[in-house]
Amino acid sequence: MTLRPVADDLASAAARHSPASHGSYAPHRRTALVLTGTGTAGAYHAGVLRALHEAGVKIDLVAGRGIGAVGAAFAAVDGAAQLWASGGLWHSPSATQLYRWRPTLRVSAWILGLTLAAVLLPLGIVLVAALIYPLAYLLRVGGLPGAETLNIAFGRLVELVFAPAALPTWLPRVVVVALVAFLAVLIGSAGVNWFRARRRRRSRGALWWLLLGAPLDGRGARGWFADGLWKLMRGAGSVAQPSPGEIGQQYGDLLLENLGQPGFRELLIMAHDLDGRRDVSFALLADPYRRRFFEGQVGAAHEDRELESVDLAGDARPAAFDACAAALSLPVATDPWLLTFAPSSGWRGETHRVCDRPDALGHLLDEVARAGAEQVILVSALPGPTGPHTLGAGRRDGRGRIGESVAAMEAAAVRDAVRTRAGLFQQLFEIRPRHNPLGPFDFAGCYDERSDREQSIGELVERGYEDGHRQFVGPVIGASGEEIERAPAPRMPRTTPSGVGRGGD
Image 1 (cartoon, helix red, strand yellow):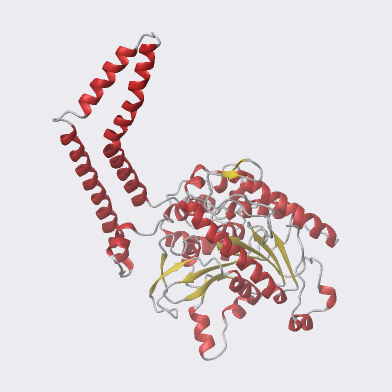
Image 2 (spheres, helix red, strand yellow):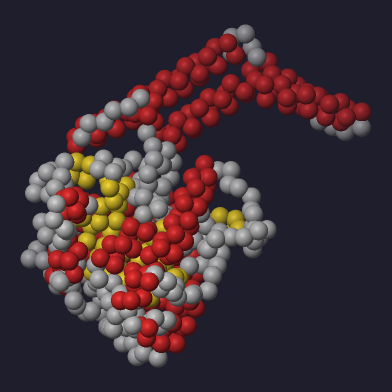
């Protein structure tokens, strides 16, 4: 899809802005970069970030939901290069292991598969015998050697497998051992899940859900993000990785101390509170936008604002990691992240289940407007809506089917959000691919019917880079006639009292 600035068709918005403010990019406006998507979409975000970085595009605020929270978190502290670099997050071997099937399900599937193979072994030998004996007969008729040897060897195998002291003995033992192992895996997994849940909050539900849990494992994605973020913050040091809360605290300190410096930007991440049934905005903003963002009207509106927003510039700085961990937790498909609110917050220290909401882009744009953004660059890894004669074969694999549903929901959310929220800004630009064969969970690549070849996640990074130049840097920045300062040279990061590096690539 080519870039097309979205016209401000709301009458109220048209009355607020002068006609000269429409139709062009202006670097003096407060600019927000919004990253939205799930799973592999983060690789596309990385490529676009590289294109914008090389062009020196001024960005005041980075916002994200889903995997977009990862790109936003790194871009906010001048670390976006860690996303696209050769040894960065999206080129690391661990990136291919994100959102795998839950370990309990994988181990159980192997046990059941091997058990089934043992049960079917006698039947398989019978079927092979049905082929071996005719083959031996043809060899004998043709006068070729080996017929007698083939008959004798296979006959001994059949006698060994079907001997009265063999088949009735080893097959039941194999089945019993497999069932015991299967139950041990389920009970062990249930015990671990129960223990984890009891440490922070109670859980209830059917026994089978406690045994099996969510189908996909979100811990790999959260660990992958934590490793990359800590590598960025520690610099060249060899300090051991701390707890998630400490990572969040140090990240919040790093961003707050350097806010306003070249390469550092304000941050906004959105997740969904399953227990509160509300979207929660985690924001670290500079004044005066911070005051305006967290202020609410008197009465119920003020109470809602207190429950739906977390100020990462205040005492809730440790929740910076929680925000990203929640955004990486998929609804239903993975276990939600457990977030403990501060005792001084509106939730009074409660522990809530938080996760991503794929169709929350509209609300995220509302929050971006509330944070004072005047123009928005929206990046999505999903192509635009399709028309007739564009049907393709449906996915048969389990993760592929889940990914199709998530992608369809997100594509509709992007379209609705652009249509209904464009009037909130003086300009809204879209960067999205014409074609993206990778589903949200195709981290190891996939076969593309339209190009008749395998495509990898590395190619998606390059596609984002090319689209960033073709759809925004060239036609928008180049056509604006504005001089944009190139990206500054890397600066020495500040350090903590303990000497741990802060910032830098």
